[in-house]
Image (cartoon, rainbow over all chains, first blue to last red; front, side):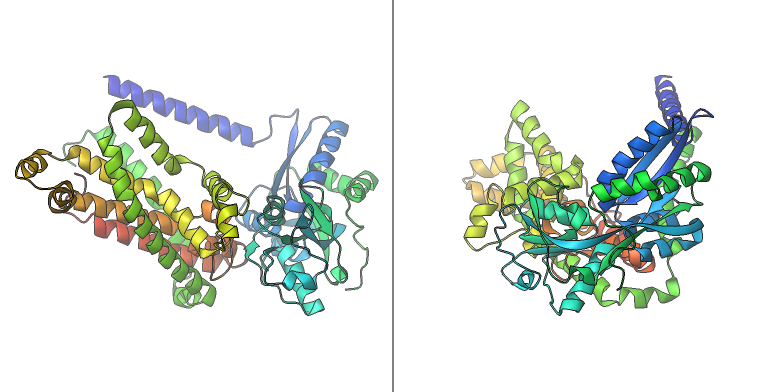
Length: 258
Length: 259
């Protein structure tokens, strides 16, 4: 019965693959611990290097990073994603997962929005008000995600209403639209300038109307809380803070006074 | 059913459960009492309306261009047909974001054709037209393959007889060939419509996401699932119901769908 053999083989391979997958998802025995860190898209570069530094200083600890929009990560955590650490790009999204926080969330950085344009500024953008020019293709984050909420705050504060051609779900997509030249301008974080080639930043007066504060917390959804605590302390400590500063982030209490 | 070996039935039941369980999962999260009010939100209605309009336009494109393309493909022979078919069917298996990037690099402002179109005052990226193009790109294979398969399976004798009786090529096509493949072509169009309704990745990459312009129902679901999961589930259920209804109506029992 060739048919039986084939099906049995397929089933065996499938079961084997599932088993391997399940093993891979957990800690590889006592010798090493894996920390699952869920971090906002705007943190991708700095957290990648922070994690490598941390691993070098702590043999046996493996930091696994997941980057996406903060709201998306919060939604995943609320649906049971195995996060040990959550670093959000605003406090609202940390509040959204408040029932999963072990201890308390702590602020570790702040950021402000800036205008991103393709190199050479083909659209001739000068300040925030010039983004309202209907001939410009402007891309922003959707108001439901942190960078979009900050954009809306600045619009209201400056009394300028933008007519974006697209509202995206995370700042990386906005940056990508500008970098590819599809959009004439986009609103991204100050620290995003330099993440993508072909993008330059244009600081504008009034950007401090919306300071984005980044909280970090250990999550009860993961299975490595103790190790996770160590990583959070590292980010909050002097090494972490100098790495954040080098990446262009401001201190968490900077320009407080919203 | 009774004649199937038992082990095969068991596997089939497991497979069927795999298809049905996620739909039950969606239904289990719905707040049925509030479903109507969640669907009646302006954002959901706008997205659904945009989806239906763009999917209809994309389906029209698929019919206008996909049927002749299916004929052309069926008229080829051997390796050239196999190669061309593989290329034309590629959108079925491409990652949607790759389809979106391809469209962007073809029709975007810096794309192969896009720069010319933009200069001519026909911007494509970030417009509703971009949504239609994205949907047509991923849905076209359904139309092409339906027509090609129907043509390959048909009996060519009627056409041959008509030709000996002096009918012209266009007349033979209109009177004999097209009616002969009509059911298969209709099924292709229905699948193209259903696929267009579900299009997500290529749209987001190529057209962006703006309410009333490019934010179709799948994009609205993607956005809402972070801030308002209940609304996302409600709109998702509507898409599921639509998809099942559309395909069921096209393939109702007793109707010959597969030629």
